[in-house]
Length: 104
Length: 119
Image 1 (cartoon, rainbow over the protein chains, first blue to last red):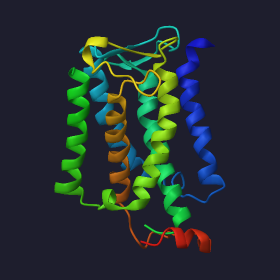
Image 2: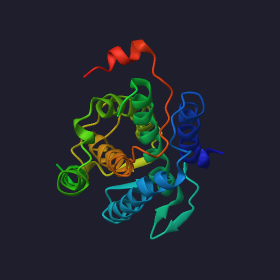
Image 3: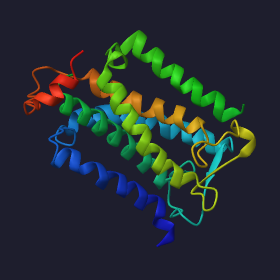
Image 4: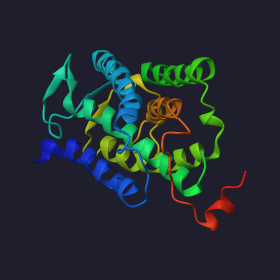
């Protein structure tokens, strides 16, 4: 179970921000095309950055807390998930403020 | 200074240039963005703090390739530049597609909130 720690942390981020959509009335998940067009270019750009950083030995990942599954080019599946999940959480957070303050 | 210091700052500069020269959303001038971003940084610190804690790190940084400054907890400060570039780019691309007629039917805000949000 320990090796799923990173993935579980990201699942926690998704679950933790879900009430913004479900309870606060933020409309981010409900605009999947717009969300994809905002997030996927970021995912791609940062995945490339990550691959280069791993090759440049800027950082590496714990064998103990990651699954060891790789997407390719040495990129852990957790990192790909990170670059998908965290931008979504960021958009949800700022949209939540916008909805609460009632303006753009 | 290290490779991470330089590349994370370059990433921020690149996002700024993208906004100023091409996207032009005006997002960075909006108060809602900065309030939202403060919330993002708070939660980033919790999540990133867990990822980088030296007692059981998930991400292991090469000490010679960043500034060596870890704050708060054991988070390399460069992570905040990296995170800013990543989240802000996503927010800019999100904002870029804003269409006033996209059925943005939001509930009428509470009067108290409206007062707070006055420019």
